Image 1 (cartoon, rainbow, N blue to C red):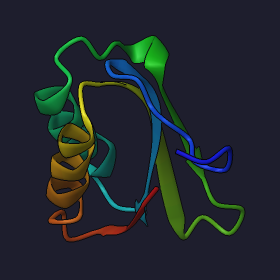
Image 2 (tube, helix red, strand yellow):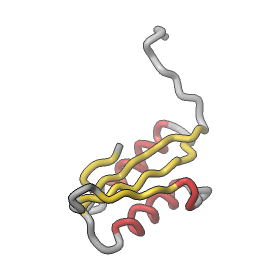
Image 3 (tube, helix red, strand yellow):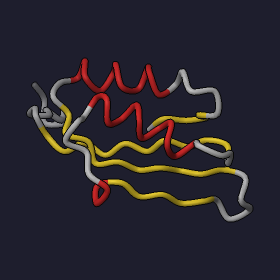
Length: 88
């Protein structure tokens, strides 16, 4: 492994941000998926912001990631939510 490569040791805290259209229940839908993948999720590890013009909402999580596959599966399920525009 070169010095430029970053190695993640699991389990670890892993920040995730989900951006989507402002609509009723967006926060609840996204949280439901994240909690299904990380049952230890608590409200102090979740934050939410609305864009300056009020068109988009972002929900950020500090997930306890178990593996790279765990993160990939979570991202894939979040992207299935119709109003989700971006998962970071």
